[in-house]
Image (cartoon, rainbow, N blue to C red; front, side, top):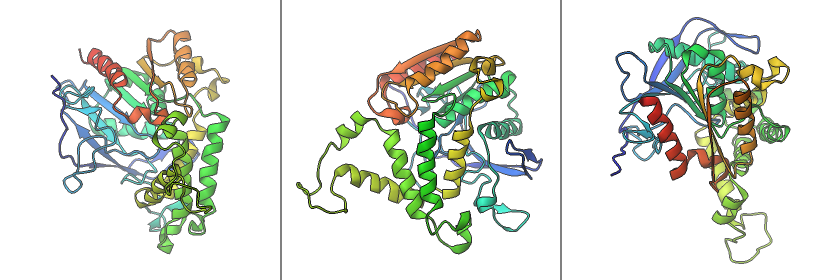
Length: 375
């Protein structure tokens, strides 16, 4: 019998950190705030905490709903909750909005204490390593010395992997899903096309558009359209839309004709309503910069040699943005550094976005792994 349930109505919390945070870009952030949510109960010995790291456009809102937004469940609500693969009857689950984000944590929309105005483009560049450092401070704030697991998909998987490198004594398991040890040139190229769309929008104003009361909606919309193409597989796009025409025949226009055009425009046009362009720029650069092997002569095995966590690495057969081959690079490096690692390649047609979906085999793998962690 399926006893899975929602965590119900939830609300975010906010933590303030006054100690400066030295960033990899060479600048220092003079204090910062992180917005986070928690689900389940921390046990007596504080050993059941699981940190979930979000991807590019994700947030701290992992599961449940807000009282004033009953139709807006968290982005991983299908995975997190009582009786679900990440069972909140057993684990204390934490979601945090990354530094530079646009869901309440310190970022470009926050007030720069030096000017009294929004940071805008002056907010410093942040990296995956900086996010992990800030998350470690949140763990200290919550009294958590060691995570049972750190979990993430895509960019979140990079954070989970780097937790095992930066804080090897503070993480028992790293769950790295649909991720990669670094971006390929093609991936960086896609990110650059998206960034150029934003940077060249007349409403961008050098990143200080808040002061002008506008949003670079056209550029951000185009960036989202480019991103969505890479998140889906060819098969899933063909299944969803094929070559279907909205009017049944060509109308020889630059207006929407094909159903796939309609979908992309819809995704693009709604994005500026809830996401910030400066955050998009910062986050894609963090993706581009991530390369833990760079400091070890390009040797990922050496980079991961300090890890003491056990790993679960999951990939999806039709994910061409972060292909199974990229996950196997991680697995190979872990094996050659004598780490314990489990690997699953899920046959799922949905492409990179598969890590967000309710695929039975995928959820079965995660459930089994978390069951082992729990007991």
